[in-house]
Length: 303
Length: 76
Image (tube, rainbow over all chains, first blue to last red):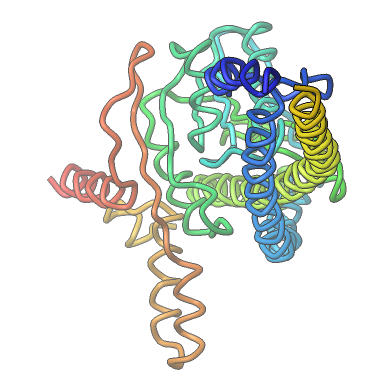
């Protein structure tokens, strides 16, 4: 009887400190509380595992579509790049040239460090040359970069990453960027390059200005009229944007798949650990109760 | 080479967006639905000045407004 009475205040204390993590070496007196505590935790971890597993499956299905879109969009980007390679176009170097950085991220998180990787690259570029302007696609990089480099922002876009990006998206964004009052001599597009399902890296591709195209050494080989040149520039810019968006989207989905895979694995490990802890604690509680009964019986026999 | 759409204030990207929309709309019913999904945009954008974000606006409407403005200034 003594034991159970001694357990009462401890039970109340245990309930008050329910937020405290349940440990293996919990004292016998507090076991009543921790047992329920562990059960609650076990339940919530199981729910989290269910959620992360579902998110992983969703990301996997989206990944196949995203990868298909990416391979298709590569054709767009690479074809226009071939033109510039053959023409040996180079970015114009010089003083007082305005550079624009376009960052292709998305609105959604829960996909590891792909957005922060891009933000880090942009910050590094801005440290080297602080007077570059920023256009950010997607809420995630906007939130990260607006904290440190808010003054460099000229435009931000939202609503990216709900679905596979379309060329119409890219064209509309390209139009809006070309409507900016400042004339940029070089535009850099930052996106995540898709190496394989496990790895990606943030890189920059260059979208050339009209002058840069016109001054490229082999430009004469193409016989392009000056009037059409502006169209070519607009179109290649949209192409490059579309490519970057699609590749970034595929990276995001694969990163999300990996992140959710890891999360499910961790949850599984935790469930195992807590299951063992739960069983042991239950055993300890039963043993404790038995001891109580036996000692009580022995005491009443004596008396 | 002068283009009619250029004189009307359209950019090349806008021109091909309109052209592709026309093509998509003239497809057969089953193919059209799948194709039209590729032409949708739901982007919003906002301008920034001195580190401050302005009200987000719908990108498509803003583009159309800008073109209308452009066309007026070109014709007058």
